[in-house]
Length: 162
Image (cartoon, rainbow, N blue to C red; front, side, top):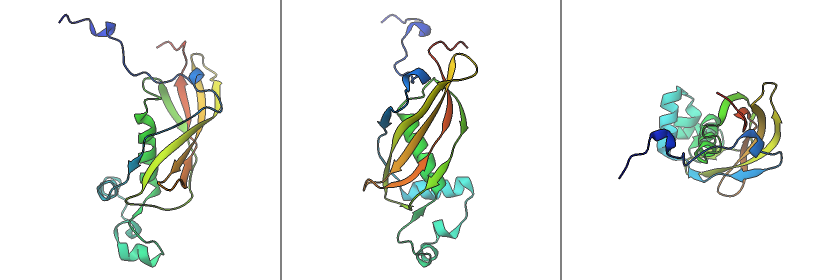
């Protein structure tokens, strides 16, 4: 087998440019179940030591049945699911801002996925790139929206020059 120079081998995955993300376009991610290991690892790494998340009796006293998952972990898993679609692979330039709203609790054992809708897509003030705002609804296995975030990202354009 002859080895081609690496820059001649085509890249299998390439993200979308901002022009490929018109307002109103949508996609959904794969699904992922949040596990006890996810929860414990996240609590240790993040330093979140709130009894609501590691003390089942405390959580039950607050009216929760089951192992409550922090909204921050729900967001991180959702963002990971979006990035696993490769929609921004090699085209994302900056995460500029975000609003995040939690609508209902998520528990260990819940399976989530994300529905992404482009709300705004426009050229940036600097050529070769665009600003894209999306609405990312996080849904559980019952189709209930448990959270929503609206990231604003700077994304390469077709004519982007490094």
